[in-house]
Image 1 (tube, one colour):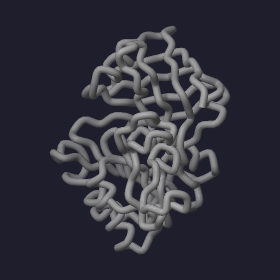
Image 2: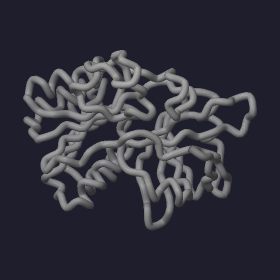
Image 3: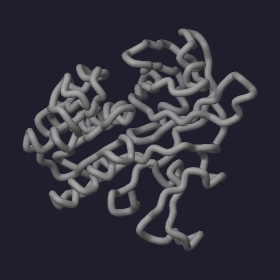
Length: 258
């Protein structure tokens, strides 16, 4: 993969160290779809490794992508300081995204795993599914973000750790409270949440696709720093693992061990 340059056309603070950045980068937006990510490079030469950030929205007509990210270290704090007109180097889109093989999808996102669900909901809407066909369950700590944008596309339920908004508890608690049903679960979030989603999918006898979050180094599959344990052996290495960056980040729930 080659580095490309993206120009920031808009950046907004959302809530609790979470920012929304729109980048003009036609070569990336032309190929991007839900579940993929880009790796952004710092302008500080001391930070050699790129930062992987999931794609929140894609505007193919405008040649833009949207990244919604949390500032957790020096690299992402640097990105949050950039203004309209600044540029960033990146590689992407990277990885395998979600398959849209569902007529009644249930999307579950938790924390910073919420943003990728927005592009997925939009793609289902563009496919012709109505708001009644698409169910989205979002898990927050306490403050919400992107909520109104989801409500334009889907039937939305929410949960929060404190109970300050929606169901007190997890996305699974909200799914049970509202009797949510569908023919495929799509999910992104922290590993404990994904374990719960996997158990819930098995309980309901429903297939699921999950996006794994993991620390990455190269981001292009060369370094093997982001492997996950799989239920079947890799045909090349003959070991039970796959690279999250290029073999994922989206997997069928029965492919991986959590």
